[in-house]
Length: 312
Image (tube, rainbow, N blue to C red; front, side, top):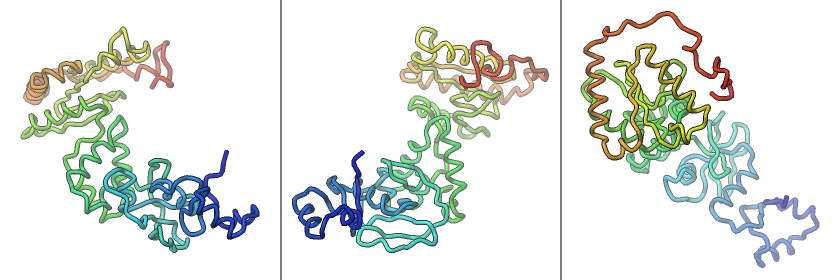
């Protein structure tokens, strides 16, 4: 594989004189990325940032540069980055460095950068609504809330307080845009009731799209592609049915809506969920909860002959 970047010392060791290096730069055969660093690619913002990372192992982009890499704002030079304590903070023309301990980061475009949460806190010049929208998108998916919690715990006390303000009332962890629509509508409809709206919450070992735990209500938004017997895999179809059984057997009300209903009948979906929540809150002891478990009450992948732990 062709080498992407070189130091001056490496070019000299390969037999290139200072004049030959300067001539190659003039002819566009190589490009100067930073002091003493060269590469064959045009030095775009991303390429130059990659060259600086190559030259400084352990570097993590922070501040406005993290904002650029996460798509929050334009690139401004010099780049901002943190390096491990005990290493040089001399960054030259293209780098402004700060010391840091173990900086929690992620990889964006192949480059180490602060987590989305730490970036949103650091980019105070970006409008709050833009940063909140960014965080809502950054922490989607089944593990969104877990990643957000881990990134929040990694912040220092001051930044943690700012992050708490920034994420207050934010809907994270949703797996799809349709779920987000339902969650937002439910949060408005349930305002005034002493309930919470959780997303991708575990109930009896299974994750449900939306859960109102105080009323023991689970809501599933079913895509025809992933939930019908014609298109879903055999394993997913099995898991989906036993998942619903587990919730119902243990006292949860399960409401399921096709994605098409969310798109054309969202008001009716929300009205039914609201009525169910109010009914369950008003009659908390209408059903005696069972206490004896059957083997089939465990997650289906632990006991079903057609499934195994790999199907979790």
